[in-house]
Length: 374
Ligand SMILES: [Mn+2]
Image (cartoon, rainbow, N blue to C red; front, side):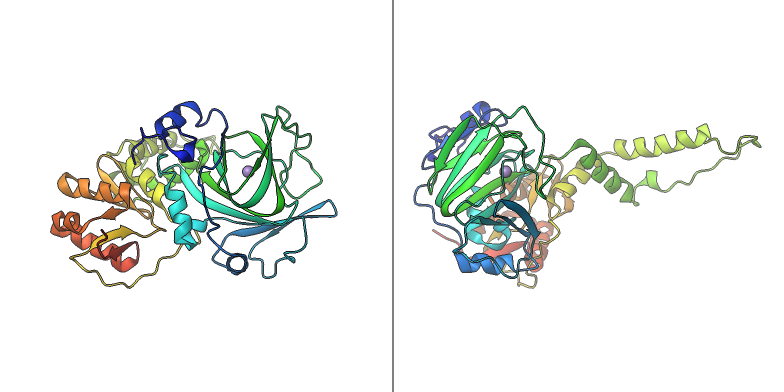
């Protein structure tokens, strides 16, 4: 992607300009960001996904002014003719190639930050109420119209009489009606309320914003699970422990041992880098791959739409696993992570070891062989 080129998607801004001026800073309304966009799925496909155990969905209704939330799967949707309900499906990119392609247009943001594509279907008046999100969001109108009201909302009080997080005293500052193809970007913490004007569908590009504590917990547990490390295989010993009159007191020596254990794990060369890469590429709980394809060595390859692949200076990460990579293999694997494809020629340049790895990924369904195009 040329990050200096102006894009209709970003109202004529280049990705570079957008990131500097708007990202995490201020909203951007883009009329006809995606002209001619079609909904990636029909009503009946929507209903089928909503009923599936493999799909994360939820139904929100506000019939007779009473908010209700039903976690999916939703076996039977309310009638399409009935106003005031909405159904949300997370992770649409895992289920539909067209949704994965839409999400890929936002890869001027690092993959590590991109989360998923959500779609909401709503009948007239449907929505989830005024709320905050803790992450950035691109709201893309893919069918029909939705009225968005947004504001900075200093009063963060929530209603306590509803099963959803709804702002108590919403004070919108701006209002826009989005038509199909229009898009609204909101930074984290902007209050927003989207209400369907007639039947409509809206896609949201969501981002991952890890909390410090949550990330530290994940990384530290990964570091400690790595039992192959030399630092892990040492048992506490206290040959100099004296008899004690205060058996309840934690020995200083044991505290020192614990501190040393944690510090050694963090200091271990490349261990934290590896834990982070594995954590960031770990597939989500509902993701599964179609394994069993046979690898064709003379063909181009494409990353499966469900695969997460990233890299750092010393490793390549894919779906929660890490590999040391250097030289030409590293260059090629990084190209696969960045562009999601390797041409037949590039595949031919991989070392034998790297090609064996690629063959394994094809068999696992993480990568697919592809006949060369164009
Ligand atoms: Mn939201």
